Length: 454
Image 1: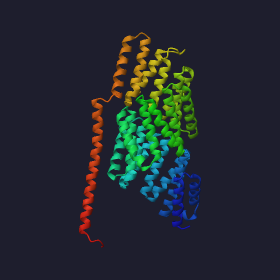
Image 2 (image 1 turned 180 degrees about the vertical axis):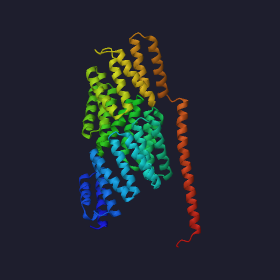
Image 3 (image 1 turned 60 degrees about the vertical axis):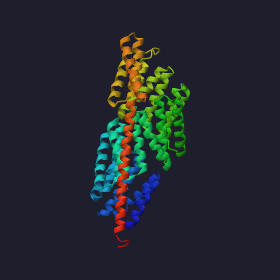
Image 4 (image 1 turned 45 degrees about the vertical axis):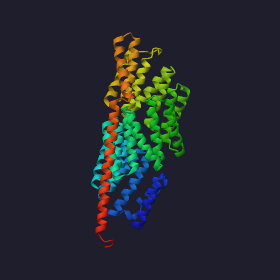
């Protein structure tokens, strides 16, 4: 078979892979790998084999066969290095990083993402640099390393703005919004989500719209606007059901359950949590499985079924510790502390409640998660009041009210931060417009000087 025919087969395999037709894509790749014409050690033959293994590895990752995916990716990487095709090498390095990330091996994932980033920067592959900076930001966000996440999102956004690529600008706006939400800066979170949503709706990027709409719903939940939170969660669910996007559906079911729990409609809350759990188990998504265990445990706590509450909360914290998800561990520890702080519970234990609640506060302070900090101070205040320790109770009530007021108010400091954030983005946009105007002026001058045909 001619190399041009092999190239055509590979291109077709890539198209099928992008469409989710993994069986056909894998079949085409395997057909390519057994061709006698690729058994020779020419640079083209080595490159074709590397590309085929790379596609097979990506397909295996999509099917959550991570061990096989890693082995196949390593074969692709060895061949890419041998062929001296740096673009292909960088692509394979990114894929290996994604495999490690899916296995929650964050340090290994970061190592390969950084290797890919260095190559993309050397090759001046600016769009790949934008993507890789964003991926590294997500990795840090997943580990609750919010300052680092923000740093990489900002770098990615700056380059996207420089190139004026709106879909990447929107993506970064959304993820910057995620970071602000995680540190309880809800005004900035809504501001950046709004910027992202405006672009994605105009570009008709419905999957991105569904994510941002869902996150806006979560912000409104934290702001205690439960009806509006439910409204946005149901809107996101409708989009995801239309797209048949199961991961999004699972997340939306969970958010709807949280809203119903807040409205004290506990049967409805449990209904949606178990719906979410079912889809999450089908996808083998450990993150959302743990989240649902935690939510189910919280609802059982609210209806007074304390033994089931502890059972599900312990399941949640066990998974989240394995995944090293600090923000989720904080929530689980807080709720376990709440169980032991409940007087009606036969296992009521102020000592155990203190242990779990102070552990949650200490972790929350590490990642600056103010929402959890003030909630735990409130629980401790109530606990100490019941135990007759009035001095301690007053201290924790003061901490609770001070922090809650800081998080939920729109004071002058908060407004100044918002204006500063907007100023930086506006300055970046002005700089981009100035550069663009200079470029256009240079083009105009060259057009006037040079002949129309050479």
